Structure formats: structure tokens, C-alpha cells
Length: 101
Picture 1: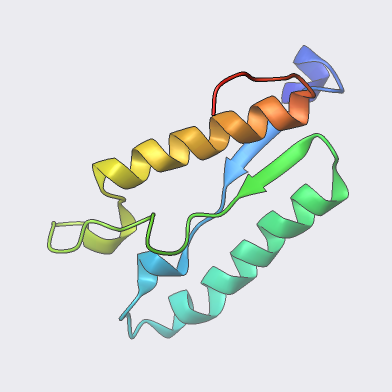
Picture 2 (picture 1 turned 120 degrees about the vertical axis):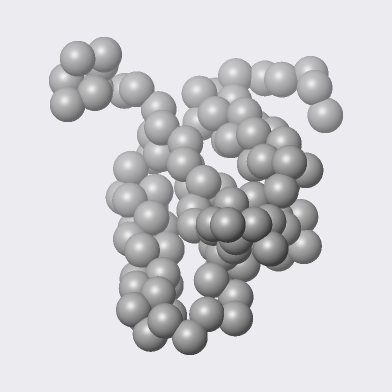
């Protein structure tokens, strides 16, 4: 629908969900479904050259443990990293040069 409204070549960038967000869970639904969703996100990006999926796993993407909604939410530093990743992905998918490193 978005591309029908704004153009067929509209680029999309998305950040994938992360196993960091369910680390330590015993919820079997999450343990089974999280990798399935991540694989679907990869498949969308692989099928469309105007879509880039960025990673959100690893040490640069810490989650806010100990809060009411805990592990689902990233720390401030992680959110800044995700924003930077998404911006770089958008620049790359649009095919423009950026002089920012």
C-alpha cells in the first residue's frame, strides 16, 4: 500500500528483532517464533533490492533488563546505534554517497 501511494521504487530499511530481546526466556513460543520472524525479515530483504534489514544482535545492542517490560526494549545507546545503522542502510539502498563516517 505504501509503494502504491508513494512509488514502486520506494526504499525500506528495517531493523531485525534480536535474540538479545529474549535471552533467558523460558517461553517456548518466543524461542520458536523469534528465529522464524528473523528469517522472514531476511527473506523480505533478500527478495527486494530496495529493502535492507539491519542486525540488532550482539554487544552493541543491549536491552533494558530490570524494567517493567524489560528485555524487549533497547538501552539508549543501543537505540542510537540502531538509528545510525538504519540511516547508513538507507543511504546505501538509495545509492547516494555520504561523506559522514
